[in-house]
Image (cartoon, rainbow, N blue to C red; front, top):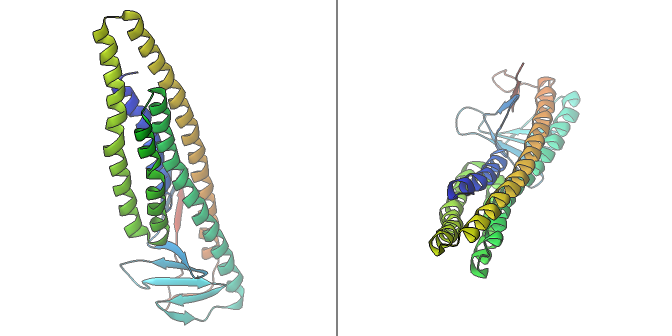
Length: 254
């Protein structure tokens, strides 16, 4: 496996990391596109939806009650249970989105550890890789609390992860290959190449399998958001301008 191939293997895991994180705010899988004008989070037992353009700027849902920009609205009795159902679905969706983000990052770090261990990495490099877990975990916390600022922060942490660790790992493989070639021992060079190829296939297969599992979970998120879309479409309540509540829009490919 060349350094370029290794970079692709690590890239697969990193793509899963960023994809898992992005699922917290929007979803794009093969047959499903979800869009919303609002960012979504929970706070003090309530579901908060916020946007920077248009009115209302903030929607708060809590136990079947509805606030628009801080003012509680009258909700027909028949709509209260629908709102509670929307809250339950949204809470479950956010929990799953967080778990997906964490799994994506774990995949990226696990791929690096597997490669580093195969190359006989020194303990310092392994400790450096492990040290990224709490830092990125905090960035995921931030993402769930404040989607706009948190997404930027998580992207920055992942960029630092890639720029700081991937070159080190790829460099170790390149150095080992160069040393084997300069030694003049063809057998040693062949064995290194075979070991690297086997490692690449093994890690690639593991990351691909875990990536597909994340795709399936993203599809599950889409189904949950479809339920929210159907629930809000059945609401009789209207916003002050007469328009219906429009939290999310889901489109399935035909």
